[in-house]
Length: 233
Length: 162
Image (cartoon, rainbow over all chains, first blue to last red; front, side, top):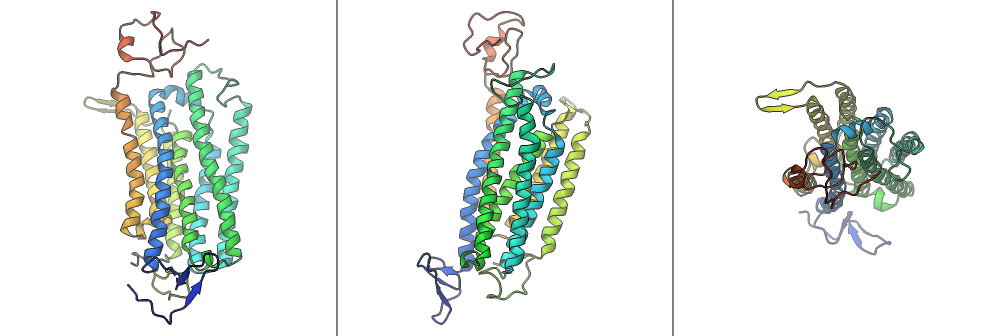
């Protein structure tokens, strides 16, 4: 535990009025404790997210276990190519996001902005593929559950196919909403980096927190991909 | 508190607050993303192969079971790579690791609900000729008394559809 001496640089954050000594806020012993506090707080939030998605994954597992044949029949309308391309896009965006954290640690703002921009580009491309290549054709083929749902295939049950597509739209839709929120947060973060705001320029943990959220979105997709796009025959 | 594998060539002041012991070489991230891409291609190819059925003594499992195990194992490996290297859990403190693990413990706990569905006397899967609505709950015991084509007199749980 390093003792704080009076001659150390003291900086007043005019936005909050709290004094930070070498980046450490007054309630923390040192910078490592402060950064650990950030990480634990963010992980607590991610645990609540895991709970939310976990319930959906459990329900999906139950219904796929019970209605294996109908789920296989309905899964033929979920095409592998947009899924594979979207997986690639999200993995690439996770990579650029972690690079953004790396360059934030090194205070290389230009490279941070480039990587955050690439992350937002990949994320937007993900949503374009998701909506343009998957959602809109499914709406046109009457595969959205509801009164207009059409199932004229001999195999599989119409009701179970509706259950499958309810799960599909709920889970990928909730995930897509997280992607959209992620794009907005990363955009805001990039704006602060551009202004070299001390909260993101000197303190890399804020960027790290956004990155944790973004990697979580990637994690959800890592499981959604085999469950919806790769059902074995 | 420096993590394993971190570089120590940075001095406080020239990098972000507290970052000097937490900067990983960029090759760690490059290796991780390459592994993730390889695993993604692997899982797509594995899903195209129809695995043989498993017969282990009294245990008979369809080939799709093996397919699912392979797909989910690859997914778990991919997820671990992301959590360990991209989310820096491998290099973080024990308290952070504890919180990261708690989330996945919860995932395991929630799947214990499936034990209930496997053993309770309610079977939502029973499809009978008179019942065009698989997905409705139906007591197993009541169903057992009826033959395949009998029409139930009491139809509490099933709302008939066209």
